[in-house]
Image (cartoon, rainbow, N blue to C red; front, side):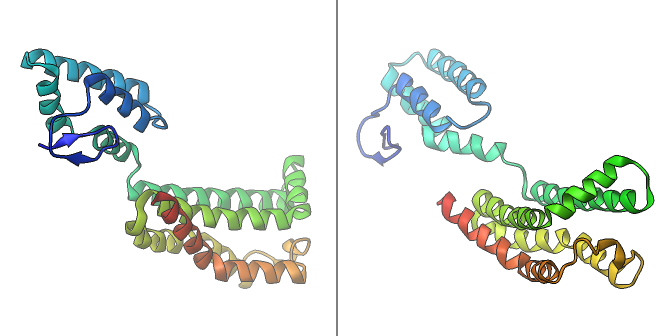
Length: 224
């Protein structure tokens, strides 16, 4: 094996990293990992055991260890990858969150118009007064979907983004259908449906996928 330097570059020659330098570099690479302390402690024990079992000078022992464990950058990368949720888990998480928002919105709607609890009347009034902020926040949520998938999964996240957006938007389409077909009276939403706001909602719905794509490319660029 070639030389292993502190910056992760390889070349020909002797090993240029000691045990303590290896651990320091690994700590640096894992500085944002939530389990950094536990990982460093475990790797330190394993490496010391390996060095003790080999009964070789540090230079030769580190050559064997690095060949087994990889460079600090490679080892840290494997731990970061292992800590990431799977693409399927991310897709399910976003879909469930959107369904949760939909259910909360429906509960407030029915609670305000058919119920007597003051909380629902208060929540409905707050949403009506801040409808534009609600729309902007929800639009930002779609940007977040794309950004997260682009940052965590890179080019492989493009198909996942399409699937996620397609499934996530189903509750929105369902809501539009039950209002258009009169299952839920449109009069209930008069306080929301001013002409400008209705137009903005329509445009936002059409642009949800392009907006999430923009977030995807931004996240993908950040990951490079």
